[in-house]
Length: 542
Ligand code: ADP
Ligand code: MG
Image 1: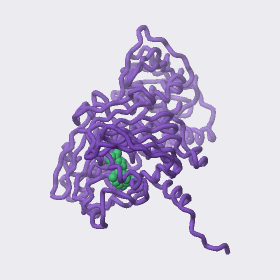
Image 2 (image 1 turned 180 degrees about the horizontal axis):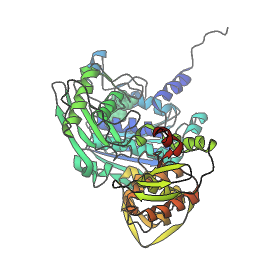
Image 3 (image 1 turned 180 degrees about the vertical axis):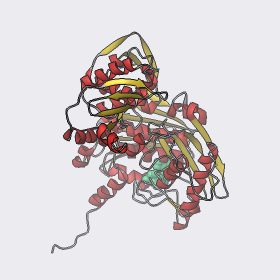
């Protein structure tokens, strides 16, 4: 056995920093929290290279008194609590006194600050946790912290960071959360030198910035106060989501499974999915929560989780006017959507299933379409039996195969300007190349706008709402080619019109089987049901 040694201070600091500072967005989060705790009215956030090279947060808050500046960088030094008991009354976002020392341990920090009650301010530079420079000077009131070269002294950690655009998206998401939580504060977010986003000065303005101009279209306002918990926010009908859902507890953005579960169950969303956008704010007496369960304060613990669940559940049900069914105590969870979307994951549904079928595939004899039933199904016949065909599923698959097999872009006569909310447009910017592969030719057009110049040829004469069509591709935040074609097919197939006659169906079937022998629509619903003559004979006792 080796001897036990006490780790040097520098190593301890780096280890501890790892818990608080995981990536640029965590630095932004801590610095913004400090600015908010300092009663700032205006906060400017700059990030270069997704925050990997530089993060700067500048506020007009109360500032740090000259005599406290060095203390602020010491571990567990905080002006926000002074005794354990204070944790139960906590009204500030910070309280652990760990952010500044953690950030300073793993980067090069410059802090400029002047306290409200003092004339002279301070500028201090700390690199890798060591003070390298300090001076006094005339600075304006407030605090500006610049964090350069994050993880420069932890190369492995730096390597783990994702691309600048991915890190930027995480920063954006954090800033959007605070814009919603503190609508009365003005936020400016700069990408390098360029102003990327500014918040408004009202909740409505903030909502527009976060969710786009038409945010109200599909959202319900939540407002529900109980004895101990008040629940507010805006929540969309489900199916609208591209994943922007925020949860705040006493204005702290947190992750909370219990609240998500309450929202999902109130809206009868199946487990494992969360296609909802919006936000929920819960206000509660601080003595009913423990905010100190996560080093980066990303979670809170509710002392009465059941009560929180039912407050949120009821708030949502009420806002959406969903009544409980009258038969005693049994909660309806009948989903208002087809099963194919809920239970089968996409790849499972389509490809694995089809491979399975392919294995036992026999040669297909020619199909002859016979008739259309009054409900719109088609009957067709082969040598071995009868098919019942669902025209909608067939159209979806056909469109999917057309999209997949014809990678041609048709230029629009005049380009169309599309606007998205900040989050979505940032995601789209990242995926412009993938969209091109799918057939959409998009060009950045400043701010959150894009010019659409070309569309996939199989869709070109369908008169779609292109803005919505592109948005439908980002429902779950990610975008891959196969899924994109499937989502587009699903979005656009109804526009192909009804299949009116057996002749139309015959033509489309022939086209589909020119691509291959398919049984399922792109989301895994069967296109056809086969009854073999052998089976029929058995039923009829022949
Ligand atoms: P905590 O926020 O948990 O107290 P931090 O390490 O984030 O710990 O900050 C340490 C202290 O530095 C804070 O308690 C606060 O007094 C001071 N401070 C940090 N940032 C600011 C700021 N932007 N404006 C005013 N004071 C600040
Ligand atoms: Mg703090």
